[in-house]
Amino acid sequence: MNHALKPVITVLKHISDFLDLICRKACLIIGIVLVVDLFLGVFTRFILSAPLSFTEEIARYCMLWFAFIGGSVELKKAGLISFTFLVDKLNPKAKRVMEIIDTLLVIVFLVIFLYVGKDAMKVFGFGKASITKINLAWTAAGIYVGTAIMLIHSVYQLLLKVTGTEAAQLEKEG
Image (cartoon, rainbow, N blue to C red):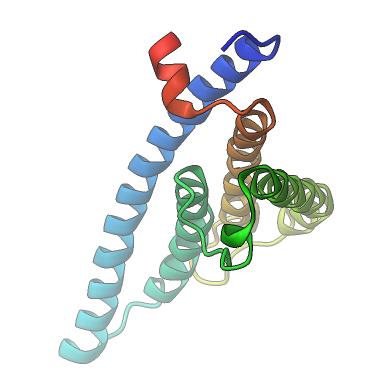
């Protein structure tokens, strides 16, 4: 690839790949915590008949982090749901244009989401969870961390689509 954007794309690729690796490990840890927490909640409620009050709260916060961090992992590998039955019928040039528009729309949504969400984070910062007393800003941060990582992945994917570069091509040249 002889393109002026090659250094930017290469740096974004490394950042995107690194964040994806971190997110995959975070999802594994969050998933383990979630399973243990839910098992503990069910065990104490139905076997011991003495439910722990914090298990539902911890599960809710784990799910929030898991959804957005896991969403970034799936966005990276193009595993999110999409309706391609019309786009797949287009010729290659029109298909590429539609994929670029699609990625641009995702980026616009993520930027708006982050912009509007900053006000919500201020509100969350004043609240504490009812049982665990965890600051709600920590729990809601998963939304914004996952969204920011999705934005990085999307910008990287957009640059690949605009330049017509394949990720495998970067591997060969890198």
